Length: 597
Image (cartoon, rainbow, N blue to C red; front, side, top):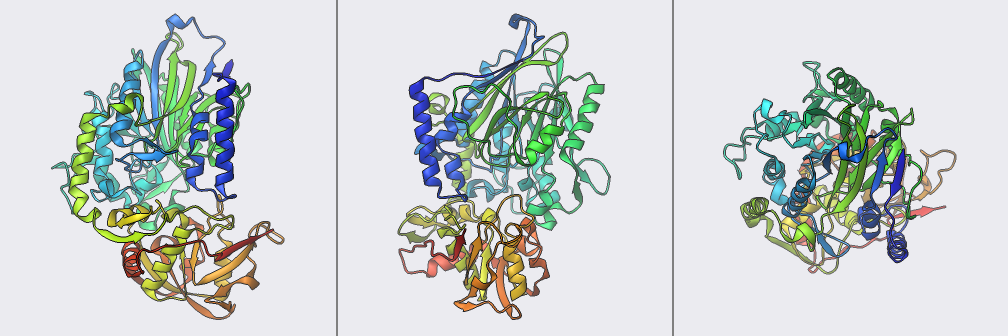
Protein backbone atom coordinates (compact mmCIF):
# COMPACT_ATOMS: atom_id res chain seq x y z
CA UNK A 1 0.00 0.00 0.00
CA UNK A 2 1.13 3.56 -0.70
CA UNK A 3 0.05 6.37 1.62
CA UNK A 4 1.43 9.88 1.07
CA UNK A 5 0.57 13.53 1.14
CA UNK A 6 1.89 15.78 -1.59
CA UNK A 7 4.83 17.87 -0.33
CA UNK A 8 4.93 21.64 0.05
CA UNK A 9 7.89 24.00 0.06
CA UNK A 10 9.41 24.94 3.41
CA UNK A 11 8.23 28.52 2.89
CA UNK A 12 4.62 27.43 2.42
CA UNK A 13 4.77 25.14 5.45
CA UNK A 14 6.11 27.95 7.62
CA UNK A 15 3.19 30.09 6.46
CA UNK A 16 0.74 27.34 7.41
CA UNK A 17 2.35 26.95 10.83
CA UNK A 18 2.12 30.70 11.46
CA UNK A 19 -1.52 30.75 10.45
CA UNK A 20 -2.28 27.72 12.61
CA UNK A 21 -0.53 29.26 15.63
CA UNK A 22 -2.48 32.49 15.15
CA UNK A 23 -5.74 30.56 15.07
CA UNK A 24 -4.88 28.88 18.37
CA UNK A 25 -4.14 32.23 20.01
CA UNK A 26 -7.45 33.64 18.79
CA UNK A 27 -9.42 30.60 19.89
CA UNK A 28 -9.70 31.77 23.50
CA UNK A 29 -9.57 28.41 25.23
CA UNK A 30 -11.41 25.14 24.91
CA UNK A 31 -14.68 26.69 23.78
CA UNK A 32 -13.29 28.04 20.51
CA UNK A 33 -15.96 29.01 17.95
CA UNK A 34 -16.33 27.25 14.63
CA UNK A 35 -14.75 30.27 12.90
CA UNK A 36 -11.33 29.41 14.35
CA UNK A 37 -11.59 25.79 13.22
CA UNK A 38 -12.67 27.00 9.77
CA UNK A 39 -9.79 29.42 9.18
CA UNK A 40 -6.92 29.63 6.73
CA UNK A 41 -4.65 27.16 8.56
CA UNK A 42 -7.34 24.49 8.57
CA UNK A 43 -8.08 25.21 4.90
CA UNK A 44 -4.44 24.79 3.97
CA UNK A 45 -4.19 21.51 5.86
CA UNK A 46 -7.44 20.20 4.39
CA UNK A 47 -6.19 20.89 0.88
CA UNK A 48 -3.22 18.52 1.18
CA UNK A 49 -4.00 15.52 -1.00
CA UNK A 50 -4.10 12.05 0.53
CA UNK A 51 -3.31 9.09 -1.75
CA UNK A 52 -3.56 5.31 -1.53
CA UNK A 53 -2.87 2.66 -4.18
CA UNK A 54 -3.32 -1.09 -3.81
CA UNK A 55 -0.17 -3.19 -4.15
CA UNK A 56 -1.91 -5.46 -6.64
CA UNK A 57 -3.14 -2.59 -8.82
CA UNK A 58 -2.71 -3.02 -12.57
CA UNK A 59 -0.84 -0.44 -14.65
CA UNK A 60 -2.49 3.02 -14.42
CA UNK A 61 -3.34 2.96 -18.13
CA UNK A 62 -5.89 0.22 -17.33
CA UNK A 63 -7.62 2.14 -14.52
CA UNK A 64 -11.18 3.37 -14.81
CA UNK A 65 -11.03 6.82 -13.21
CA UNK A 66 -13.90 8.83 -11.78
CA UNK A 67 -14.63 11.32 -9.01
CA UNK A 68 -16.78 11.65 -5.94
CA UNK A 69 -17.45 15.30 -5.08
CA UNK A 70 -18.48 15.38 -1.43
CA UNK A 71 -20.35 18.21 0.27
CA UNK A 72 -21.98 18.37 3.69
CA UNK A 73 -23.89 20.71 5.97
CA UNK A 74 -24.95 23.13 3.22
CA UNK A 75 -27.74 24.51 5.41
CA UNK A 76 -29.37 26.44 2.57
CA UNK A 77 -26.37 28.79 2.28
CA UNK A 78 -27.28 30.32 -1.07
CA UNK A 79 -25.11 33.41 -0.62
CA UNK A 80 -21.30 33.67 -0.27
CA UNK A 81 -19.58 33.78 3.12
CA UNK A 82 -16.24 35.12 4.30
CA UNK A 83 -13.39 32.74 5.17
CA UNK A 84 -10.26 34.41 6.46
CA UNK A 85 -11.42 37.70 4.96
CA UNK A 86 -11.97 36.20 1.49
CA UNK A 87 -15.33 35.43 -0.16
CA UNK A 88 -16.07 31.73 -0.42
CA UNK A 89 -19.02 29.57 -1.31
CA UNK A 90 -22.48 30.62 -2.22
CA UNK A 91 -24.54 28.22 -4.29
CA UNK A 92 -23.53 29.63 -7.69
CA UNK A 93 -19.81 29.57 -6.85
CA UNK A 94 -20.02 26.06 -5.37
CA UNK A 95 -21.76 24.90 -8.54
CA UNK A 96 -19.01 26.35 -10.72
CA UNK A 97 -16.40 24.34 -8.83
CA UNK A 98 -18.42 21.13 -8.89
CA UNK A 99 -19.09 21.44 -12.61
CA UNK A 100 -15.41 22.09 -13.36
CA UNK A 101 -14.35 19.14 -11.20
CA UNK A 102 -16.92 16.93 -12.94
CA UNK A 103 -15.62 18.00 -16.35
CA UNK A 104 -12.08 17.10 -15.25
CA UNK A 105 -13.07 13.54 -14.26
CA UNK A 106 -12.01 11.13 -17.05
CA UNK A 107 -14.96 8.75 -16.66
CA UNK A 108 -17.47 10.99 -14.89
CA UNK A 109 -18.28 12.23 -11.39
CA UNK A 110 -20.94 11.87 -8.72
CA UNK A 111 -21.96 14.64 -6.33
CA UNK A 112 -22.62 13.24 -2.85
CA UNK A 113 -24.17 15.33 -0.07
CA UNK A 114 -23.82 13.99 3.47
CA UNK A 115 -26.84 15.55 5.18
CA UNK A 116 -28.07 18.88 6.54
CA UNK A 117 -28.58 20.19 3.04
CA UNK A 118 -31.51 22.04 4.62
CA UNK A 119 -32.37 23.41 8.06
CA UNK A 120 -30.79 26.18 10.17
CA UNK A 121 -30.71 28.10 6.92
CA UNK A 122 -30.51 31.80 6.05
CA UNK A 123 -33.87 33.43 5.30
CA UNK A 124 -33.56 33.35 1.49
CA UNK A 125 -33.80 29.57 1.76
CA UNK A 126 -35.57 28.98 5.09
CA UNK A 127 -38.51 31.31 4.41
CA UNK A 128 -39.14 29.34 1.24
CA UNK A 129 -39.16 26.05 3.20
CA UNK A 130 -35.64 25.30 1.96
CA UNK A 131 -36.93 24.45 -1.48
CA UNK A 132 -34.11 26.57 -2.99
CA UNK A 133 -31.51 24.39 -1.23
CA UNK A 134 -32.96 21.31 -2.93
CA UNK A 135 -33.23 23.21 -6.22
CA UNK A 136 -29.47 23.84 -6.13
CA UNK A 137 -28.85 20.08 -6.28
CA UNK A 138 -31.61 19.67 -8.85
CA UNK A 139 -29.82 22.16 -11.12
CA UNK A 140 -26.57 20.20 -10.69
CA UNK A 141 -28.30 16.95 -11.64
CA UNK A 142 -27.68 15.60 -15.13
CA UNK A 143 -30.36 14.65 -17.70
CA UNK A 144 -30.48 11.06 -16.39
CA UNK A 145 -31.97 12.35 -13.13
CA UNK A 146 -35.63 13.23 -12.55
CA UNK A 147 -38.40 13.42 -9.98
CA UNK A 148 -39.83 9.95 -10.69
CA UNK A 149 -38.47 7.17 -8.43
CA UNK A 150 -36.88 5.30 -11.34
CA UNK A 151 -35.19 8.51 -12.49
CA UNK A 152 -33.79 9.31 -9.07
CA UNK A 153 -32.30 5.82 -8.84
CA UNK A 154 -31.04 5.82 -12.45
CA UNK A 155 -27.54 4.29 -12.55
CA UNK A 156 -26.18 7.34 -14.38
CA UNK A 157 -27.92 10.05 -12.33
CA UNK A 158 -25.01 12.00 -10.89
CA UNK A 159 -26.36 13.30 -7.54
CA UNK A 160 -26.91 11.27 -4.36
CA UNK A 161 -27.87 12.56 -0.93
CA UNK A 162 -28.48 11.30 2.56
CA UNK A 163 -30.27 12.78 5.57
CA UNK A 164 -28.88 14.84 8.43
CA UNK A 165 -30.49 15.66 11.75
CA UNK A 166 -31.77 19.01 10.42
CA UNK A 167 -33.79 17.29 7.71
CA UNK A 168 -36.04 16.24 10.61
CA UNK A 169 -36.49 19.74 12.09
CA UNK A 170 -40.09 20.00 10.87
CA UNK A 171 -40.97 16.33 11.00
CA UNK A 172 -41.19 13.43 8.61
CA UNK A 173 -44.26 14.77 6.82
CA UNK A 174 -42.51 17.99 5.79
CA UNK A 175 -39.32 16.09 4.93
CA UNK A 176 -41.32 13.82 2.65
CA UNK A 177 -43.05 16.78 0.99
CA UNK A 178 -39.75 18.57 0.44
CA UNK A 179 -38.09 15.57 -1.20
CA UNK A 180 -41.05 13.93 -2.91
CA UNK A 181 -43.02 17.00 -4.01
CA UNK A 182 -46.18 18.95 -3.24
CA UNK A 183 -46.75 22.61 -2.45
CA UNK A 184 -46.36 23.78 1.13
CA UNK A 185 -49.37 25.41 2.82
CA UNK A 186 -47.52 28.76 2.66
CA UNK A 187 -46.44 28.21 -0.96
CA UNK A 188 -46.02 27.95 -3.82
CA UNK A 189 -42.66 29.68 -3.75
CA UNK A 190 -40.28 29.71 -6.72
CA UNK A 191 -41.57 26.54 -8.39
CA UNK A 192 -45.26 25.75 -8.97
CA UNK A 193 -45.98 22.97 -8.46
CA UNK A 194 -43.07 21.91 -6.28
CA UNK A 195 -42.00 18.54 -7.65
CA UNK A 196 -39.33 17.61 -5.11
CA UNK A 197 -35.81 16.30 -5.52
CA UNK A 198 -34.41 15.08 -8.84
CA UNK A 199 -31.89 12.80 -7.12
CA UNK A 200 -31.82 9.77 -4.84
CA UNK A 201 -31.89 10.08 -1.07
CA UNK A 202 -30.46 7.00 0.63
CA UNK A 203 -30.44 6.21 4.35
CA UNK A 204 -29.91 2.75 5.81
CA UNK A 205 -30.55 3.39 9.50
CA UNK A 206 -33.84 5.32 9.67
CA UNK A 207 -36.81 2.96 9.92
CA UNK A 208 -40.49 3.78 9.52
CA UNK A 209 -42.05 2.33 12.68
CA UNK A 210 -45.36 1.65 10.90
CA UNK A 211 -43.92 -0.42 8.04
CA UNK A 212 -40.63 -1.66 9.48
CA UNK A 213 -38.90 -0.52 6.27
CA UNK A 214 -36.29 2.18 5.85
CA UNK A 215 -37.75 5.65 5.34
CA UNK A 216 -35.85 5.96 2.05
CA UNK A 217 -33.89 3.33 0.12
CA UNK A 218 -30.76 2.30 2.02
CA UNK A 219 -28.53 2.45 -1.06
CA UNK A 220 -28.33 3.04 -4.77
CA UNK A 221 -26.04 1.59 -7.45
CA UNK A 222 -24.42 3.83 -10.04
CA UNK A 223 -22.39 2.60 -12.99
CA UNK A 224 -19.03 3.67 -14.39
CA UNK A 225 -18.37 2.07 -17.78
CA UNK A 226 -20.67 -0.76 -16.77
CA UNK A 227 -19.13 -1.35 -13.33
CA UNK A 228 -21.40 -0.90 -10.31
CA UNK A 229 -20.53 1.51 -7.52
CA UNK A 230 -22.71 1.33 -4.39
CA UNK A 231 -23.70 4.37 -2.35
CA UNK A 232 -25.03 3.78 1.18
CA UNK A 233 -26.47 6.55 3.40
CA UNK A 234 -26.78 6.97 7.17
CA UNK A 235 -27.44 9.63 9.81
CA UNK A 236 -26.23 9.79 13.39
CA UNK A 237 -28.30 7.48 15.57
CA UNK A 238 -28.44 10.19 18.28
CA UNK A 239 -30.67 12.37 16.06
CA UNK A 240 -33.64 12.04 18.47
CA UNK A 241 -31.56 13.75 21.19
CA UNK A 242 -30.91 16.85 19.06
CA UNK A 243 -34.27 17.20 17.31
CA UNK A 244 -37.63 18.01 18.87
CA UNK A 245 -39.68 14.86 19.59
CA UNK A 246 -42.29 15.81 16.98
CA UNK A 247 -39.54 15.93 14.36
CA UNK A 248 -38.73 12.25 14.71
CA UNK A 249 -42.21 10.93 15.42
CA UNK A 250 -42.94 7.77 13.44
CA UNK A 251 -39.32 6.76 12.80
CA UNK A 252 -36.56 5.08 14.75
CA UNK A 253 -32.79 5.32 14.34
CA UNK A 254 -30.67 2.18 14.47
CA UNK A 255 -26.94 1.65 14.84
CA UNK A 256 -25.12 3.24 11.91
CA UNK A 257 -22.37 0.66 11.38
CA UNK A 258 -24.73 -2.31 11.68
CA UNK A 259 -27.17 -0.81 9.17
CA UNK A 260 -24.40 0.15 6.73
CA UNK A 261 -22.77 -3.27 6.90
CA UNK A 262 -26.07 -5.02 6.34
CA UNK A 263 -26.58 -3.00 3.18
CA UNK A 264 -22.98 -3.55 2.09
CA UNK A 265 -23.58 -7.30 2.21
CA UNK A 266 -26.71 -6.82 0.09
CA UNK A 267 -24.68 -4.86 -2.46
CA UNK A 268 -22.00 -7.58 -2.49
CA UNK A 269 -24.64 -10.14 -3.36
CA UNK A 270 -25.41 -7.98 -6.40
CA UNK A 271 -21.76 -8.07 -7.48
CA UNK A 272 -20.82 -4.59 -6.24
CA UNK A 273 -17.24 -4.29 -4.91
CA UNK A 274 -16.74 -0.50 -4.87
CA UNK A 275 -18.74 1.15 -2.07
CA UNK A 276 -19.07 4.75 -0.88
CA UNK A 277 -20.81 5.67 2.39
CA UNK A 278 -22.39 9.09 2.94
CA UNK A 279 -22.97 9.61 6.65
CA UNK A 280 -24.09 12.57 8.70
CA UNK A 281 -21.64 12.08 11.52
CA UNK A 282 -18.11 13.38 11.89
CA UNK A 283 -15.33 14.96 13.88
CA UNK A 284 -12.77 17.74 13.84
CA UNK A 285 -9.64 16.08 12.54
CA UNK A 286 -6.55 16.20 14.77
CA UNK A 287 -4.19 18.93 13.62
CA UNK A 288 -1.08 17.87 11.76
CA UNK A 289 1.60 20.16 10.34
CA UNK A 290 4.18 17.86 8.74
CA UNK A 291 4.66 17.70 4.96
CA UNK A 292 3.86 13.97 4.85
CA UNK A 293 1.97 11.37 6.85
CA UNK A 294 3.45 7.90 6.61
CA UNK A 295 0.80 6.17 8.74
CA UNK A 296 -2.99 6.05 8.86
CA UNK A 297 -4.79 8.35 11.27
CA UNK A 298 -7.46 7.11 13.68
CA UNK A 299 -10.41 9.46 14.08
CA UNK A 300 -11.94 10.21 17.46
CA UNK A 301 -15.56 10.34 18.54
CA UNK A 302 -18.54 8.53 17.10
CA UNK A 303 -17.32 8.60 13.51
CA UNK A 304 -14.11 6.84 14.55
CA UNK A 305 -16.11 4.09 16.24
CA UNK A 306 -18.32 3.72 13.17
CA UNK A 307 -15.47 3.57 10.64
CA UNK A 308 -13.61 1.01 12.77
CA UNK A 309 -16.63 -1.31 12.50
CA UNK A 310 -17.25 -0.96 8.78
CA UNK A 311 -17.07 -3.88 6.37
CA UNK A 312 -13.81 -4.29 4.45
CA UNK A 313 -15.71 -3.66 1.23
CA UNK A 314 -16.27 0.02 2.14
CA UNK A 315 -13.78 2.24 0.30
CA UNK A 316 -14.80 5.83 1.05
CA UNK A 317 -16.79 7.62 3.75
CA UNK A 318 -18.12 11.11 2.99
CA UNK A 319 -18.89 12.50 6.44
CA UNK A 320 -20.43 15.66 7.93
CA UNK A 321 -22.09 17.14 11.01
CA UNK A 322 -18.96 18.61 12.66
CA UNK A 323 -18.71 21.61 10.27
CA UNK A 324 -14.97 21.05 10.08
CA UNK A 325 -12.70 19.05 7.82
CA UNK A 326 -11.56 15.46 7.61
CA UNK A 327 -9.21 14.11 4.99
CA UNK A 328 -7.44 10.94 6.02
CA UNK A 329 -7.15 7.20 5.62
CA UNK A 330 -8.37 5.36 8.70
CA UNK A 331 -8.04 1.62 9.28
CA UNK A 332 -11.09 -0.39 10.22
CA UNK A 333 -10.87 -3.22 12.76
CA UNK A 334 -9.23 -5.48 10.14
CA UNK A 335 -6.69 -2.89 8.99
CA UNK A 336 -8.51 -1.99 5.75
CA UNK A 337 -7.75 1.67 4.99
CA UNK A 338 -10.94 3.65 4.44
CA UNK A 339 -10.71 7.15 3.00
CA UNK A 340 -12.74 9.58 5.16
CA UNK A 341 -13.53 13.15 4.11
CA UNK A 342 -15.55 16.10 5.40
CA UNK A 343 -15.64 19.49 3.66
CA UNK A 344 -16.26 22.15 6.31
CA UNK A 345 -19.83 23.49 5.80
CA UNK A 346 -22.14 25.93 4.00
CA UNK A 347 -20.78 25.20 0.53
CA UNK A 348 -17.39 26.80 1.27
CA UNK A 349 -15.56 23.62 0.26
CA UNK A 350 -15.99 20.21 -1.33
CA UNK A 351 -14.14 16.93 -1.10
CA UNK A 352 -12.39 16.25 -4.41
CA UNK A 353 -12.15 12.45 -4.28
CA UNK A 354 -10.46 10.64 -7.15
CA UNK A 355 -11.13 6.92 -7.45
CA UNK A 356 -9.88 4.26 -9.83
CA UNK A 357 -11.41 0.85 -10.50
CA UNK A 358 -9.72 -2.31 -11.67
CA UNK A 359 -11.82 -3.46 -14.65
CA UNK A 360 -11.18 -7.11 -13.72
CA UNK A 361 -11.82 -7.14 -9.96
CA UNK A 362 -14.34 -4.26 -10.23
CA UNK A 363 -12.91 -2.94 -6.96
CA UNK A 364 -11.27 0.35 -6.00
CA UNK A 365 -7.51 0.10 -6.44
CA UNK A 366 -6.64 3.79 -6.04
CA UNK A 367 -8.17 6.59 -3.98
CA UNK A 368 -7.09 10.15 -3.43
CA UNK A 369 -8.70 13.22 -1.85
CA UNK A 370 -8.21 16.89 -1.12
CA UNK A 371 -10.72 19.26 0.49
CA UNK A 372 -10.92 22.21 -1.90
CA UNK A 373 -12.10 25.60 -0.68
CA UNK A 374 -14.54 27.25 -3.09
CA UNK A 375 -12.96 30.69 -3.22
CA UNK A 376 -15.15 33.20 -5.01
CA UNK A 377 -12.22 35.40 -6.02
CA UNK A 378 -10.21 32.89 -8.05
CA UNK A 379 -10.48 29.93 -10.39
CA UNK A 380 -13.99 28.61 -11.11
CA UNK A 381 -15.35 31.04 -8.51
CA UNK A 382 -14.77 33.91 -10.92
CA UNK A 383 -17.53 32.49 -13.11
CA UNK A 384 -20.55 31.61 -10.91
CA UNK A 385 -23.09 29.29 -12.45
CA UNK A 386 -25.71 31.39 -14.27
CA UNK A 387 -28.73 29.16 -13.63
CA UNK A 388 -28.06 28.91 -9.91
CA UNK A 389 -27.22 32.62 -9.65
CA UNK A 390 -30.65 33.30 -11.14
CA UNK A 391 -32.26 30.97 -8.58
CA UNK A 392 -30.55 32.84 -5.74
CA UNK A 393 -31.60 36.21 -7.16
CA UNK A 394 -35.25 35.08 -7.34
CA UNK A 395 -35.09 33.80 -3.75
CA UNK A 396 -33.56 37.08 -2.56
CA UNK A 397 -36.25 39.09 -4.31
CA UNK A 398 -39.04 36.98 -2.83
CA UNK A 399 -37.95 37.47 0.79
CA UNK A 400 -36.53 41.02 0.54
CA UNK A 401 -39.52 42.98 1.96
CA UNK A 402 -39.36 41.13 5.27
CA UNK A 403 -35.64 40.42 5.47
CA UNK A 404 -34.48 43.99 4.85
CA UNK A 405 -36.52 45.65 7.62
CA UNK A 406 -34.09 47.41 10.00
CA UNK A 407 -34.53 46.40 13.65
CA UNK A 408 -31.66 48.26 15.32
CA UNK A 409 -28.07 49.48 15.14
CA UNK A 410 -25.24 47.46 16.72
CA UNK A 411 -22.38 49.58 18.05
CA UNK A 412 -19.91 46.70 17.57
CA UNK A 413 -19.84 43.07 16.50
CA UNK A 414 -21.80 40.77 18.84
CA UNK A 415 -20.52 37.23 18.42
CA UNK A 416 -20.87 33.63 19.55
CA UNK A 417 -17.16 33.57 20.49
CA UNK A 418 -16.99 32.01 23.96
CA UNK A 419 -14.88 32.82 26.97
CA UNK A 420 -12.93 29.91 28.50
CA UNK A 421 -15.94 29.47 30.80
CA UNK A 422 -18.37 29.15 27.86
CA UNK A 423 -20.06 32.56 28.05
CA UNK A 424 -20.67 34.62 24.90
CA UNK A 425 -21.86 38.16 24.23
CA UNK A 426 -24.49 37.01 21.77
CA UNK A 427 -25.65 34.28 24.13
CA UNK A 428 -26.13 36.91 26.84
CA UNK A 429 -28.19 39.10 24.49
CA UNK A 430 -30.46 36.20 23.51
CA UNK A 431 -30.91 34.97 27.08
CA UNK A 432 -31.78 38.51 28.21
CA UNK A 433 -34.39 38.72 25.43
CA UNK A 434 -35.97 35.41 26.42
CA UNK A 435 -36.06 36.26 30.11
CA UNK A 436 -37.71 39.61 29.33
CA UNK A 437 -40.28 37.97 27.04
CA UNK A 438 -41.75 35.82 29.82
CA UNK A 439 -40.68 37.75 32.93
CA UNK A 440 -38.96 34.81 34.61
CA UNK A 441 -36.25 34.62 37.26
CA UNK A 442 -33.74 33.21 34.82
CA UNK A 443 -33.39 32.14 31.17
CA UNK A 444 -31.06 29.61 29.55
CA UNK A 445 -30.25 29.39 25.84
CA UNK A 446 -28.66 26.33 24.21
CA UNK A 447 -25.53 27.20 22.19
CA UNK A 448 -26.47 24.99 19.23
CA UNK A 449 -29.47 27.22 18.57
CA UNK A 450 -27.28 30.28 17.92
CA UNK A 451 -26.35 30.04 14.27
CA UNK A 452 -24.76 33.36 13.23
CA UNK A 453 -23.11 36.48 14.63
CA UNK A 454 -24.39 40.08 14.56
CA UNK A 455 -22.12 42.49 12.70
CA UNK A 456 -21.67 46.13 13.68
CA UNK A 457 -23.99 48.56 11.95
CA UNK A 458 -27.58 48.17 10.79
CA UNK A 459 -29.22 45.01 12.07
CA UNK A 460 -32.08 43.75 9.94
CA UNK A 461 -34.84 41.22 10.47
CA UNK A 462 -32.87 38.88 8.23
CA UNK A 463 -29.76 39.23 10.36
CA UNK A 464 -31.66 38.21 13.48
CA UNK A 465 -33.36 35.37 11.63
CA UNK A 466 -29.92 34.04 10.69
CA UNK A 467 -29.00 34.12 14.39
CA UNK A 468 -32.13 32.16 15.42
CA UNK A 469 -33.63 30.36 12.39
CA UNK A 470 -35.50 27.52 14.11
CA UNK A 471 -38.73 29.30 15.12
CA UNK A 472 -38.74 27.56 18.49
CA UNK A 473 -41.45 28.49 20.99
CA UNK A 474 -40.31 29.87 24.31
CA UNK A 475 -41.52 27.95 27.35
CA UNK A 476 -41.91 29.16 30.94
CA UNK A 477 -41.62 26.48 33.61
CA UNK A 478 -40.67 26.08 37.27
CA UNK A 479 -37.67 24.24 38.75
CA UNK A 480 -36.44 23.88 42.29
CA UNK A 481 -32.99 25.05 43.28
CA UNK A 482 -31.79 21.46 43.43
CA UNK A 483 -33.10 20.83 39.93
CA UNK A 484 -31.23 23.90 38.66
CA UNK A 485 -28.00 22.50 40.09
CA UNK A 486 -28.68 19.16 38.38
CA UNK A 487 -29.53 20.94 35.12
CA UNK A 488 -26.29 22.92 35.12
CA UNK A 489 -24.29 19.73 35.70
CA UNK A 490 -26.01 18.20 32.67
CA UNK A 491 -23.99 20.60 30.53
CA UNK A 492 -21.27 17.91 30.85
CA UNK A 493 -23.01 14.79 32.11
CA UNK A 494 -24.14 12.57 29.23
CA UNK A 495 -22.94 15.01 26.57
CA UNK A 496 -20.63 14.21 23.65
CA UNK A 497 -18.95 17.56 24.40
CA UNK A 498 -19.67 20.37 26.85
CA UNK A 499 -22.88 22.25 25.99
CA UNK A 500 -22.63 25.45 28.04
CA UNK A 501 -26.05 27.09 28.30
CA UNK A 502 -26.13 30.87 27.97
CA UNK A 503 -27.72 32.38 31.12
CA UNK A 504 -29.66 35.48 32.12
CA UNK A 505 -30.45 36.21 35.78
CA UNK A 506 -28.03 33.47 36.82
CA UNK A 507 -24.31 33.45 37.69
CA UNK A 508 -22.12 30.55 38.81
CA UNK A 509 -18.68 28.95 38.74
CA UNK A 510 -17.73 25.53 37.42
CA UNK A 511 -14.65 23.41 37.99
CA UNK A 512 -12.45 22.47 35.07
CA UNK A 513 -12.06 19.09 36.76
CA UNK A 514 -15.19 18.18 38.67
CA UNK A 515 -14.74 17.34 42.37
CA UNK A 516 -14.96 13.58 42.46
CA UNK A 517 -16.49 12.90 39.06
CA UNK A 518 -17.17 14.58 35.73
CA UNK A 519 -20.93 15.06 36.29
CA UNK A 520 -20.38 17.28 39.35
CA UNK A 521 -18.60 20.27 37.87
CA UNK A 522 -20.76 23.13 39.12
CA UNK A 523 -19.88 24.84 42.40
CA UNK A 524 -23.40 24.83 43.86
CA UNK A 525 -22.45 27.36 46.53
CA UNK A 526 -21.50 29.90 43.85
CA UNK A 527 -24.89 29.92 42.11
CA UNK A 528 -26.76 33.18 42.41
CA UNK A 529 -30.22 34.07 41.10
CA UNK A 530 -30.48 37.80 40.46
CA UNK A 531 -27.70 38.46 42.95
CA UNK A 532 -29.04 36.26 45.77
CA UNK A 533 -27.66 32.82 46.69
CA UNK A 534 -29.58 29.87 45.29
CA UNK A 535 -32.01 28.30 47.76
CA UNK A 536 -32.01 24.54 47.03
CA UNK A 537 -35.60 24.16 48.26
CA UNK A 538 -37.07 27.25 46.61
CA UNK A 539 -38.92 27.26 43.29
CA UNK A 540 -37.70 29.46 40.44
CA UNK A 541 -39.27 30.38 37.11
CA UNK A 542 -37.18 29.76 34.02
CA UNK A 543 -37.47 30.48 30.29
CA UNK A 544 -36.05 28.04 27.74
CA UNK A 545 -36.99 27.13 24.18
CA UNK A 546 -39.24 24.18 23.48
CA UNK A 547 -36.37 22.11 22.09
CA UNK A 548 -34.50 21.82 25.37
CA UNK A 549 -37.75 22.07 27.40
CA UNK A 550 -38.61 18.71 25.86
CA UNK A 551 -35.22 17.23 26.81
CA UNK A 552 -33.25 18.09 23.68
CA UNK A 553 -29.43 18.06 23.90
CA UNK A 554 -29.82 15.54 26.76
CA UNK A 555 -31.11 18.13 29.26
CA UNK A 556 -33.45 15.63 30.91
CA UNK A 557 -34.14 17.79 33.99
CA UNK A 558 -36.16 20.34 32.02
CA UNK A 559 -39.11 18.04 31.15
CA UNK A 560 -39.57 17.64 34.93
CA UNK A 561 -40.44 21.35 35.23
CA UNK A 562 -43.91 22.29 36.45
CA UNK A 563 -46.40 25.02 35.49
CA UNK A 564 -45.41 24.90 31.84
CA UNK A 565 -46.66 27.86 29.73
CA UNK A 566 -45.85 28.37 26.05
CA UNK A 567 -44.82 31.89 25.07
CA UNK A 568 -43.74 33.70 21.88
CA UNK A 569 -41.38 32.40 19.21
CA UNK A 570 -37.72 32.92 20.12
CA UNK A 571 -37.04 35.11 17.08
CA UNK A 572 -39.93 37.43 17.92
CA UNK A 573 -38.62 37.78 21.48
CA UNK A 574 -35.17 38.73 20.19
CA UNK A 575 -36.60 41.26 17.72
CA UNK A 576 -38.77 42.87 20.40
CA UNK A 577 -35.85 43.05 22.82
CA UNK A 578 -33.47 44.64 20.30
CA UNK A 579 -36.09 47.19 19.28
CA UNK A 580 -36.54 48.24 22.92
CA UNK A 581 -32.83 48.66 23.68
CA UNK A 582 -31.22 52.12 23.58
CA UNK A 583 -29.66 52.53 20.15
CA UNK A 584 -27.01 51.78 19.13
CA UNK A 585 -27.17 48.63 21.24
CA UNK A 586 -24.42 46.33 22.45
CA UNK A 587 -23.78 43.15 24.42
CA UNK A 588 -20.70 41.81 26.18
CA UNK A 589 -19.27 38.93 28.17
CA UNK A 590 -19.99 39.85 31.80
CA UNK A 591 -18.56 36.89 33.75
CA UNK A 592 -21.99 35.41 34.27
CA UNK A 593 -20.08 32.12 34.12
CA UNK A 594 -16.58 31.57 35.55
CA UNK A 595 -14.32 28.54 35.39
CA UNK A 596 -11.89 27.60 38.15
CA UNK A 597 -9.12 24.96 38.10
